Image (cartoon, rainbow, N blue to C red; front, side, top):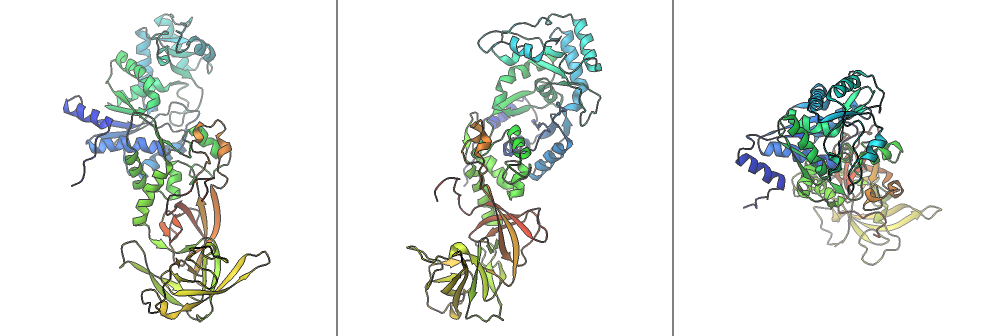
Amino acid sequence: MTEEKSLNFIEEIIEEDLKNGVHKKIKTRFPPEPNGYLHIGHAKSIVLNFGLGLKYGGTTNLRFDDTNPVTEDVEYVDSIKEDIRWLGYQWADEFYASDYFETLYEYAVTLIKKGLAYVDDSTSEKIAEEKGTPTTPGKESEFRNRSVEENLTLFAQMREGKFKDGEKVLRAKIDMASPNMHMRDPVMYRIKHAHHHRTGDKWCIYPMYDFAHGQSDSIENITHSICTLEFVPHRPLYDWFIEQLDIFPSHQYEFARLNMTYTVMSKRRLMQLVNQGYVSGWDDPRMPTISGLRRKGYTPSSIRTFCDKIGVAKRENMIDISLLEFCVREELNQTAPRVMAVLDPVKLIIDNYDSDTSEYMETENYPNQPENTRKVSFSNTLWIERSDFMEEPVKKWFRLAPGATVRLKSAYIIKCESFDKDAAGNITEIHATYIPEGKSGNDTSGIKVKGTIHWVDAKNAQVAEVRLYDLLFTTENPAAEENFLEHVNPESLIVKQAYVEKGTSANPGDHYQFVRNGYFCVDKDSGDTLVFNRTTTLKEGFKPGQKK
């Protein structure tokens, strides 16, 4: 009998609302601003909002908060939709805040007519100064008591484009002495003469987030508007607009955003990494973006599992990135086929194996599936990992060394006889002899070996580029660093030329466990040469600067 999972606090609220008939059916939404690519923090919100809709037989809308034409682009819209679908979700309806521009304008007119909004000619600096501080009340604007008629005329002229950017704003008339700074006559509309990706040049005034968001929720009859904790102080304003307009009473609920070690989530900082060339783009596998994680080899289910494990909390906390790695490692351990690949190759020549002979060795494809096998070519010339040979072995060294014996995985027992070096002292070739009776699966040699190493047939191998990705930052909490770029890990990407088994698939996104090396996936850059990205190591990796 499995233990029933406890409800998170939002699920408790929803179940209580459904039980008491507050709502017959729930409706959630995911409302990204299309000014960048989604990251793992957004994934948490996606999994939460869409998951609640699915769990309680409700629906979830996708609504783009496209109220700032200067920073938004269709490229981001398309990437957001792709990411949501990739995570395994489909929205009920697709909306844009710009769909509601006319309605929002009429809402603003309604508030002006009720004496609850006014046009202010003050500069943004003066408005900020007159707002006061959290401990001192603000000062009312000299334009606060304009007549309803004058405000209606000026607001209409703002829409008609008769004023320049920043010349006027529309503000709500609430309480300049409120202890909540967001209630001190917040700006509702600002002038922006900028081309909008959907409405073109129809509008030159755009609603602020706080005016557009709650009303958009209400228009769509969203029952549970779920956002992160930084919006707690905005909730009274969210409720005030809905109450004064007497529209559908959507309600806002807040949960802790995702903070994760060794990364940053700020779109501004992520854009710096892209624009300043620290990464190759938004989908660089070192980025915490969903597209970056996808390219690195993360699966939708591993990200959903991660979001499920971290849960939904009311207090901020820091999640260790190793939990994310654990989730994908656990999945790929069961689903990724095994392939032998040598990432730092040195040649191994088996002197007593006929150079004109080759054979195929049978080896497993998946763990715990002995019947699921593949055949791997074998000859007298192999590639092995340089790290599997030690000229002067240390104590308890069970791999290859002069005079030592090891098993070649799924093949023969071999004994190292000699090795060659170049002028710089680097090992160039290792010579060994094999034990014909020591073949894996049919070993009659009686020889006991303690070490097994993997290999690739040098006469029948594919050349591959392997990109070893590591943590992007050397400090655990780069988000707390003012000069966070100083903490970029110089070894976050190491590129190696490697050899993999012949016949390894070249389809971008295909996953493999490279035996003894880690989990990898085929990159979209693959062409004549295969390119593999390391998704994660076989075991929890070391952090930069940590002694191994």
